Length: 155
Image (cartoon, rainbow, N blue to C red; front, top):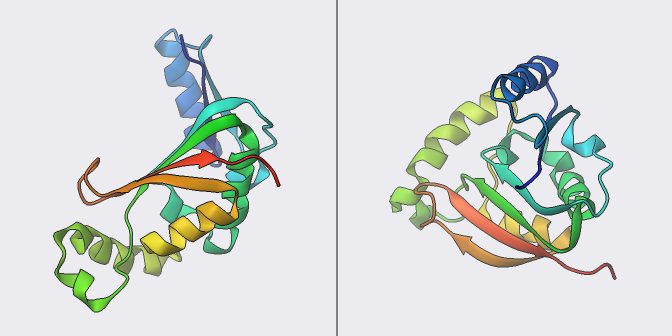
């Protein structure tokens, strides 16, 4: 019975998503907006916002503002779930299997102009945007980090 709202900045992918929603007969529950995350105007509408394998694709200089837009989109007490790769923080991390794909992916992402952030950078951005990180785990989805963050009251 949940309602789902998708945000997709590229017109082709937004339209193809809408077509699939119609084909599956679930258009009364799922909406897809062709909008960039930094332009979202949702206010207190959602219980959960998810960013799954998308954070590294966002412009690095706009990630904090996008997280703040997510904070505004959540109802009081809402949660944000961010799942993405994290860059190593120190040399010893290069020997940690959880960073193997992050290291490889970062090489490709840099060539495209994207940044894979460290866990500390992501946690700091979440806190600055008004979230309290409740969980930070590499065990939920192997080789990815899952952050669960609660929206804090404004103030």
